Length: 206
Image 1 (tube, rainbow, N blue to C red):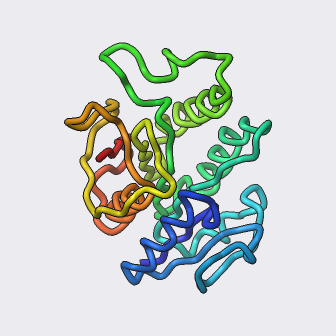
Image 2: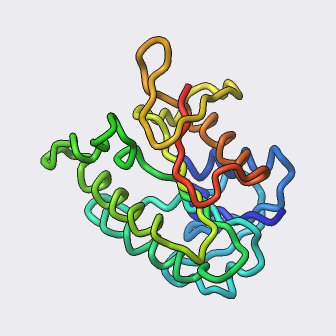
């Protein structure tokens, strides 16, 4: 299986890259700064917005782990729109590293509805949510949107265990909503290898 990871040098992206390599998948890192890669892997040095349909046609799966810089959070929307435009009508699946803002906290409210518009995280939460709303309306595209738990831990332990939820934010027995990036990566690559959530939004937690 041929997999491309966009943003493979970022926090989540680097964990995804390592996990995909652990599974012996044929992985290509799509990056702007290949010197930041910590592992030897085929690379495509290109800005996300310069990618073409032809660039991605080779892959069975594209994982979007792109994270824009502070102050340009709107790129969450435009980047995902660009990728969906490239992949619509193709057989390449698009898996997205999502956010928690789109998760329901009860039957009527999502996290974004309860978020403080003045909070430092709000621009990211808002733009990721808006991007998600556009994605889920795509008909001619094989997509999956995977949200982490509320506490997404970059250097958390790789336990090789996780629990699956639907679009609802869940907490563990200790009352915590958390997942390590390493275990999130396992869940994402599990979805790559054995798809169970095509055209679905789901989440994982410890």
